[in-house]
Amino acid sequence: MAHQADAKRMLDERGYTGSTIHNVNPAHLLEKAVRDRIVDSYYWKEQCFAINEATLCDRAAEMTFIGGTYGQQKPTPFLCLTLKLLQLMPERDIVLEYLHQTEFKYLNALAAFYVRLTFDAKDVYETLEPLLADYRKLRRRTKDGAYALTYIDQFVDDLLTKDRVCATSLRKLPLRTLLEDLGQLELRQSPLGEELDELDNDDDSDSVAELNGNTDGADPHVVNLSRTGTMSSEG
Image (spheres, helix red, strand yellow):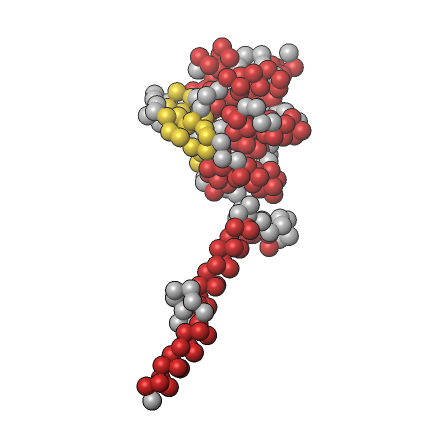
């Protein structure tokens, strides 16, 4: 009952005095037009009523796509559950459990979106960057109601680099390099680092061979000796 009362106060535009995120009413992290469409939607009224942090997992497990609004500005279940999370404001440990469990990938995506909306910049990078190595497929509902294929790593990259995702304007995220310069973040190590180093070494070897006039893989010293011998015989 306490959660329901808090939820009603959060959607009330008249003098909200509850908990805030980034110094604003958490519900206002979604635009008003989107909030209005969410609370008027069938999914919100039927599937988001009286749910808590535990039962929200059941709803998320049933999701089959991500997205913002589609068709006649109809909100997706993904966006409806985002607003519900903003109402519930679960403890950080619960959000991280949503993010790190491996059974329901759409719950992972929902938690990643919530992290981007609510965490501080440093924590956004540190929490979401490991998902850049998660290549599981996701379906995304497009504005025209069709479906498109994307991946968790691509979705997370969008969250880290774009200003608008899933019909939601995101708070501007400082460049990672700036936070590195300020000493707030360690230099990020790419999961492909070893492979890239090997490619760089191969490129360096090829460059040395070309400088020595060796393009077919033969020993440049043998080639030079052969040429010397030929010139001597002609002389």
